[in-house]
Length: 138
Image (cartoon, rainbow, N blue to C red; front, top):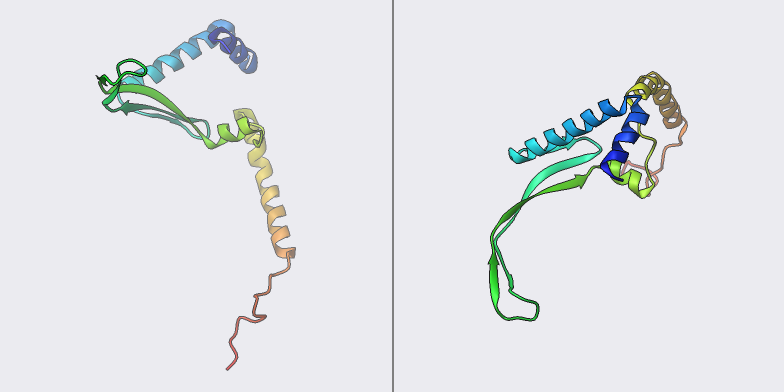
């Protein structure tokens, strides 16, 4: 997906105009770049973490098959580590991503779900220990 396609998708998903979506994408990218340049990391829970990593100084062959070595100076680079929700979505094991409007619906349904879990736990038979009794006979 190209940047323009991302902007189009964001505009469609959010109901924003393409101009506003482009401003939002550009501002987001600028903030990420500025933050990483300042040496800070950016963590978006469930999605992932942007961080600056440093590759140390190393020696490598000057040319393939050559015994001559050159030293490559240390470098910094931007890296991204996927979060648990993103990993699950990519692997096909994810639940549907909740949007902010879905959150209110989810929160109102939460007490019902908790009650169902409690009912299941109460009706579940208790497991017996292997010895048959937890008390030791003397």
